[in-house]
Length: 152
Image 1 (tube, rainbow, N blue to C red):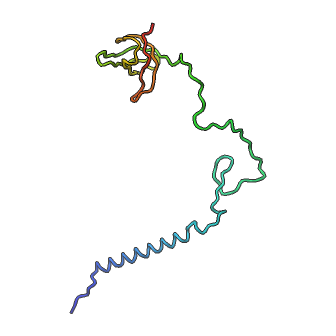
Image 2 (image 1 turned 120 degrees about the vertical axis):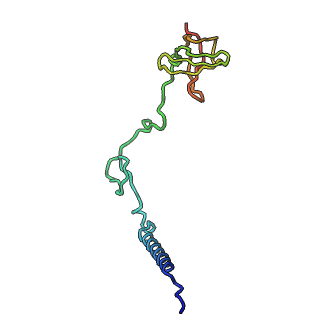
């Protein structure tokens, strides 16, 4: 007598495939019934109230509208007053300066931060522990001192 060609594992695999197909069909039907394609325009509209909140009800046409002065609206960065050049000049002490390599550091008296200085930014020779006045500019790796002069 011949054996059946279908084994237990084959039957289980067939059941799983059938179950997957049925689940897929069921999900497809659910998507069709809950899709937004069948809605009309009024159901898809959203309104913004005077406080900036989104709502589904249209605004009341009888309500008085506020008039906004366009010059009061600020877009982007607020305008800054011009900076006085005298306030840009800082004072500090040279903490390190290597004359052979041509660079060093100045410690700012106010902020106590260490600021890089290169020999090209010097107006005269400086050495360690000299009191100097300088301006600061943003460099690639941080702040750089420029227009460095010995303080009198």
